[in-house]
Length: 154
Image (cartoon, rainbow, N blue to C red; front, side, top):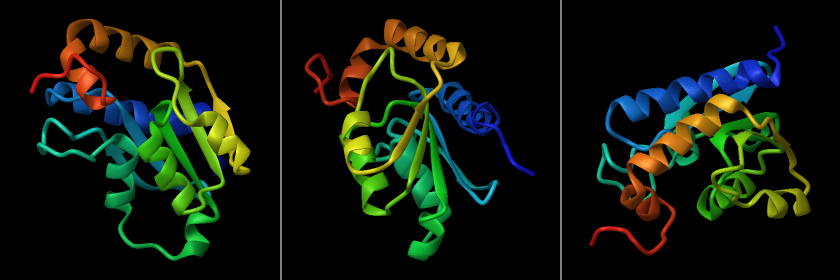
């Protein structure tokens, strides 16, 4: 069964909603390989007191060790444009396709991914925009911390 881009995004959105319900940052991800969901993840920086557990990195961790041939057939699906760290992880594992829910509230490494040959699809999903807009309004200090900006609590 072939999943549409929107159907793939639904797995990441579910993770984002779970993360927010846990008191975390509502960013989710899914790793899709050959039409199957191999792993999902969500931003768990708050939940795990982690410096690096973004949605994409959590998803990769949940997938476990994989051969390069698996990553070469994968799509990383994320609710939000990937930051530099997550962009680097996508490039490191040579994931050829990225589906992004939205890049209105935050624009990450999309141009760099494209420049390195990655197929980047931005869906401009209204639910993803609303999730992040609400979160940024409600938790500006936590949001700034997540993206490494001033305004973060020390």
